Length: 359
Length: 129
Length: 148
Image 1 (cartoon, rainbow over the protein chains, first blue to last red):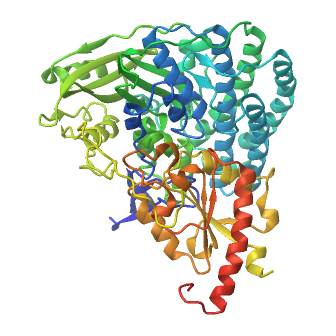
Image 2 (image 1 turned 90 degrees about the horizontal axis):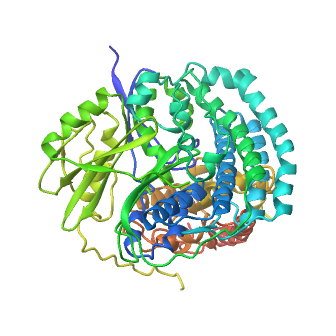
Image 3 (image 1 turned 60 degrees about the vertical axis):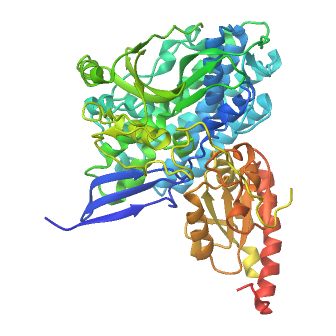
């Protein structure tokens, strides 16, 4: 047996937009074990819930992460609305679903780009981000913010979209679909992508379940786990079918995300078709009391917002279990046995969002 | 749509391992482990998922009473257990990958552990407010 | 105009930011904003870099990493703090693990506020940093004390 050496990976590393550190135990070129160490982005924002009004805290929960920001805000509101027994207007739920799908597309395109960059395919990276700007334009036009939207409120949303805007969004969808088809085709057929992803970073079906993976990671290993199937918010009225692949490798996880771009477009068309007229916010009085585990599907997988209140204007506890934290054990499993040169690609396929993970 | 009500079952620490074993045998997925202060003491909640329905188990906890780790049953629990150990100061015994307090390194030990924390911010040199 | 100013290289580090500003920094490099037309290149190596673009309020274990990267950069160098968290700690100022801005750890030359900072203002900040970089270079060549 050859000698074992430990190679540190991160926290500052060219393929990582965010800091995470891995200790890779190597035998020659092969990784025997990977031990993640985190904490570079831990801010302790869950503690702030004890200092801020529960209504103001929506803005902090949106800043857990700048990529999945909208869905964080919406899920926190969902939890508080549940314990206060508030029924928000149906139109607000539809608007939340539309914005959620837009932020999912922006996140997936961002990831596809970073993934291409991680493989050294810079041209593809630039193209993904070029298309992503179109999504950000819609988000900015309808909410005022490119990456942090700030439209969620306890009791609804603060901005409406008028009929002309909804029509405009619908008219833009076909060209987006063309862009997505073009991008997906490259990921699906290009030799560079295939040699870097196929058969690499295997996460067997039973292991994926056992290790509690979520999102595209578990769906790429053949489990149809998508919280949108539970029909939270407006999703009960939309035609949703989760994207599942069976290959269980980096390629499968990549294609799940690519195919979900189309699911999101379908859901938006669906939602605009069925959005009811009416108010977008209900007045909220009093303070919450009780506890609830609110869950939603983020671009990276299932997120749990635990809120606990005891009748004061500050909540007693807010706890977020983000998808990246749940995917870390799966990452450790994928890395064992891979080659050192594949580590960046495998790390990227769980779509690590460290800001979320450590809060 | 109105969300379903959630039930949380409180059990004794001694029953934890057996109950989690039966969840594992029934094919549940471990969703999360969370901790919250309850009066002077703490409570640790384990959530499991099957067919997209959440089931919760809750045990009482305190910093001077170690909790047996479930990482021999669900390996994934090591991230949550290390996190709770670091943030709340509640010890776990037998974690499969035990970071021994270095998983999340904070400026003050166990920030969620005691309610008496005051953070003093110094003005940085040369910065105008 | 010196060659340095025509093609400054930047290094970006996320010091406990929420990602919002980081993805906007990355967006600056991509086709819509395309700072590479100014000769600005993103590098992963501190020893290649002239401008340190840093986001986030700097938490406990990042202090050392930030200082380390800063010290590895060659003179002259400028630091651009992007986003309100990097400027002052922002909404996270009261968090127990946040030191409250990059200036608590290393000297900052340009502050770019915003949550998240827009690509336009980030580019503006970097262009201002170029002027400061040039001044520092002159001071260094003239042998002013404390610049090397």
